[in-house]
Image 1 (tube, helix red, strand yellow):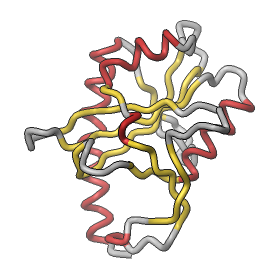
Image 2: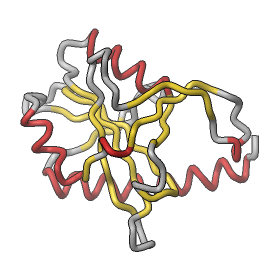
Image 3: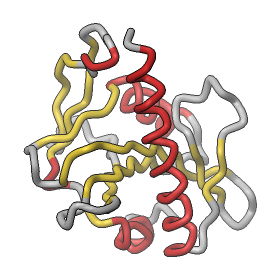
Image 4: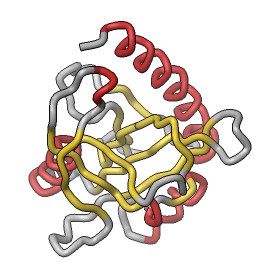
Length: 166
């Protein structure tokens, strides 16, 4: 493992994660809560007005533009765990994956989301093998989401309401 690259990537992701949290909470007046359990597979969650956890949120930062590739990668484990929690925990209604991607003007990030459904016939992604070789990762299962299904973050709340998630 390239330790220097690992910490560089970690700092990069943390910087944009803070920007996303601020933008998310400003846009929607919904607080993102950090999981206190460091073993939790998803980093954040959303509570309803009764303080019940209703959604899981996974944040990803990439050094690419939205339309640079046909797909965007995330860990297969994130997808599997999200599906499992929605199926098994009555209060968890959705898992939203949010990516911070280079904006088309070259400075900063634009944020996009994708809500994974439990539909087995879902054609919005496929499973492959890959890994971040710059950090020395070995081959692993990944979920490749087609970028055409990523939507601008500003539409998330409307999408959640239209699908009766909140």
